[in-house]
Image 1 (cartoon, rainbow, N blue to C red):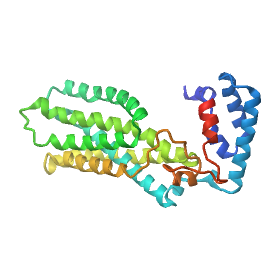
Image 2 (image 1 turned 135 degrees about the horizontal axis):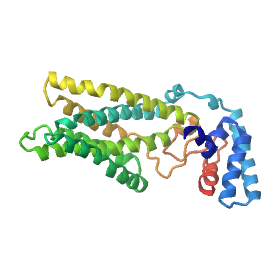
Image 3 (image 1 turned 90 degrees about the vertical axis):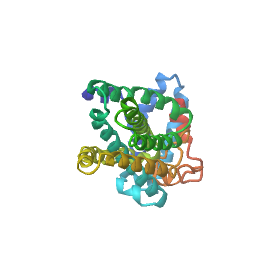
Image 4 (image 1 turned 120 degrees about the horizontal axis):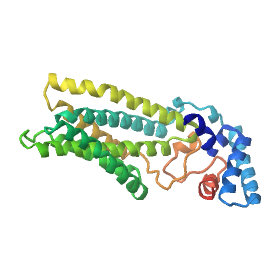
Amino acid sequence: MSVFKRRVIPESPRWLLIRGEKEVFRRVVEKASRKNGIPAEYVDIEIEKLIARSEDMRRTSSESTATVFDLFKTSNLRKNTVILFYSWLVNSFIYFGLSYNTGELHMDPYLSFFLSGAVEFPAYLITIKVIGKVGRRRPLAIAMVIAGLACCLAIPVPSEYAPLKAFFPLVGKFCITATFATLYVYSAEIFPTVVRNVGLGTGSTVARVGSIVAPFVRELGGSTFASFPDLLYSFLSVSSGFLIYFLPETNNEPFADTLKQAENIGKTRKSEDGTKADHYDDFIGNKI
């Protein structure tokens, strides 16, 4: 399927324009415009405006060759990147840690395995609704804190109360699943177009470190004290939720194309020539 996907799903027009691939950009936009019934005359005018604007930006910037290291060059963007990468690491670490913990829920192992997977389905559905209406930052932070508290509350519950002992880890799994889904959307909206794929890829790589370490922490709990993993999950999750409040809200905000725009994300962004940097979004995002 991946072989044929390239012919079915076009490349991002925004990315093509930033990379200077004008002819490919023109073909993609014209094809999308025809399918959406937009007059060709209007499309041609808008395409020329966008190409001219991108050429002006490219003449004064070398960001078309930006790398992940550019995410650490300015203070605000560096702060956002570090917090996001930390959240990726924590989310993956707790998610896989709780997944490996299904055999310790003090109930039938088959039922434990089923419930651990079943809570993810409503988590994804609710996340889609919530982040579209409420935003990204607040639900993400709240879910992280609740996940941490749930892991902590499971510690003092006696093993004799098996349903309650299993309830709190399942709440944690529900919340951490929701935050994992939100992180993909949130990261893509914070990272600028020139390094969006690289930023997401690096965040995902950082997350894999958490998934690698998670099984060893469960083993460490067996050699120290049983509640150590839950205490660690609680601390990391709550700290991540607190740090997320230092990130900007991106819901209903135009995407940042350049590193300069990403540095000012969350504020009224201006393009390099002093005009509001949402003309691209008005045409590409709303018209086609």
